[in-house]
Structure formats: C-alpha cells, structure tokens
Image (tube, rainbow, N blue to C red; front, side, top):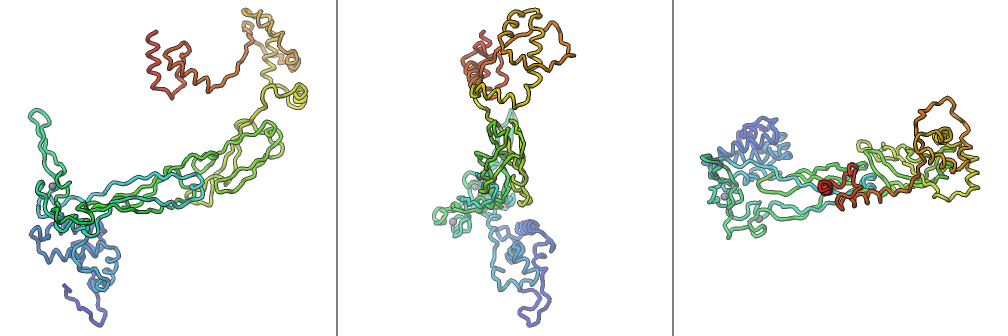
Length: 468
Ligand SMILES: [Zn+2]
Ligand SMILES: [Zn+2]
C-alpha cells in the first residue's frame, strides 16, 4: 500500500500527506467530527460484512485511525505515512470504535445506531466558605463503568446477531391507539438491550462476564479557585460512565457552600453581624474578627463616632476574592446591633446624670405630652379617664416639655387616650397564633395572612371558619 512514492529513499522527497484525506473523501481542514462522519459513511459502503471490498475498507479504517487521532494526524500532516511507521499503530487495522458501528452488523438495513452521548453525572461538592475564600483541591471518588479491556467492550470472544431484533437493536411494535387507529412504534429490543447482538454464554468475557464494561474506582481532582461561587459548575468532560456504544457523559461538579456561622456571602461581598453594648455604641469600641484566611482583624470605631442599631460599616478588600482576579476582593460589611441595659438597671442617680449628659427627649414625645396637657380636659368622649391619668403621670416629663410649639393648630374633636403597652415575645406570639389556628378556628385566628409557612394548615383553618 505504499503508493507511488519511494520507501526509505535516502533523500527526503516530498511526502504524500493527502492520501488518507482522499481515502475518506474529506478536505485537509476537516474537523475530527467531519472525519468521523466521513468514515462512517464510507464504512457503511465498504464494510466487508455489507459486501464491501476488504482492501478498501482497511484503507479507510487506517485513514480514520490516523486522522481521528490528533497526535497521529499532526505527524501525518508533517511527514506522511512514513512518519508514522516508526511510531507504531499505523495499519494495525480497525479503529477501536469500529465495534460500535458494527456490533452484530450485517443486518444491513437501518444503518448503525447513531453514537449517543451518555448521561452527565451531577455531583454536588460541599465546601466551607473558608475553602471558597482561599481555594482548595478536593478529591472526588467515583465508581464508573469503564469499557472492558480484555474484550475491548465486545463482551466476549464471539458476538452474534440478536435473533429477536435481527441485529437492529430495536423492534417495531404495533399498538392500537384508538378505534381504528394503529400506531407503529420503535422499541428497544429487550433480548439484547438494544445492542443488536449477544454473546453466547460459553464465549462470554471472563472479566466483564459479557457486560462489556466493568466498575472501576476513579479519582477526580477538583481545583477550586479562590472566590469560587456557590452553584458554580465545573465540567469534567467525558469522565462519566464509559460505554462501548456511547461517548461518555460529563461529570459536572456543582459547588455548594455550607452556611457559615459568622460570615454571610453575597457575591463578592461578605457580611457579619456584630453586637455591641450601648456604652460601646456611644463611646467607641474595639473588637477582633477572625477572617476566613485565619487573619485576625482588629476593628475599632473612629473617635467620636456613635453607632445606631442597624448601622452598616464597610471594610474594603476584606470581602471574597473575585473569581476573575483573585487579587481584587469585595467588601466586608459589618451590621451593628446594640444591646441596651435591661429595664430597671439604671438607678435614679444614674438617670439624672444621663439626663444631664444626653440630649433632650425627642420633640414628638414632648408634643404628645403637650397635647395631653392642652386638650386633656376638653375631649368629647372618654375625657374624664384621660385627664385623670394624665395627672397621675410623672410631672417631670411635663416639666421638660418647655419648648412649646406655639403656632401648631389641632382639631379640637380629637380624643386623647392613655394606653398601656405590654411586653411581647413576638416569636412566642406567632407560635401561639399558629397553634390556635391549628386548634381549629378559635376566635383569634382573624389574620393568618402574614404567615406563609403553614399553607397546608390554612385549609384546616378555613374549614374551621366554615363550621362557624
Ligand atoms: Zn435484540
Ligand atoms: Zn470483557
């Protein structure tokens, strides 16, 4: 098959780097997919089982074997077939996946089954926020089906055509789908699981027992870059189960961040909640925060700064590393909460000292007191009660309301009522409301609308209401 050119000639003559392309009928710029396609087309025509010419089939098989292998293709493009002769492989015969095309071939009609891609395997990988901050390498252990080596995925020494489907791998099933209507459907052949062929018991491969694949443990190394995101996908192409009939699917690793006890992440930014005392809020504070990379940050307030509940402060470059450029980081936001001293814990003396130090009570409270003083006796209804209670309230509060708002006019018909607040544990209240609702329409279940976590219970509530 050396063709017309000289073999082993002393001089480096121009080598033939076209022949194999011509054999397959593709151009030199053909992609691997094109080459594959062309080979299949040619193989259909020239396969000896289908009455083709064996020599021609060998030629296209060889062409395909070389051109479908990027390494060999590069050598061939440069040095022709001669270049490959030393490297082995050339002309050894059939490409590995020839079996996929012609397992139990010879049936002739319908052509080979199209090569499908196997299912992707999605693997959630749990990571701590620390691991996402610094980056890490995780080993992922998988048990995969791998094409059996001794039998090359054939399943045994001999492969015979499936009698049930005559090698088609599918069967036509006729079903009646309606009166006078018949549907013809293709169904995978159950005798050969769609292979079109079976291996006689005596010839079955000892290693895979005719299954054509074996289970093997594999380890994938997942390199998580700093700043990796929750939900980020990392694709390991063709690392899922192997099959003689299919291209392997991908292993898709989906990163999942486990909740962190201190830090909350939003994109490239981090959030922490910090509770300080009222004293610290007023006079300044200093605290330490252990960061995700084990640095201890010392954080202090600016001189004179007063922190209010719900205030946020930001620290630049202390957020998450950005995936695009891990040297750039987001922000770290600190949300402040303030613990106030418990009721009754401030002595009368301390109070008067605080009054001397802190600014006056807010204008609204003063206005209310003032209003009460002005209209307390003039109310139309319930006036008696409110006037009596107003006199019982601490006179000091009224004394402090000195900065009158003179020009303000108010409707004279307004009723003034003194009311008393009680302590509420809102969580306990909600639980109680819920239980009452579950109990079946007690009197308090008027507004169940603000609760969205007991939808299934609401049906019961409605039932309760209907019975009333
Ligand atoms: Zn079959
Ligand atoms: Zn085997």
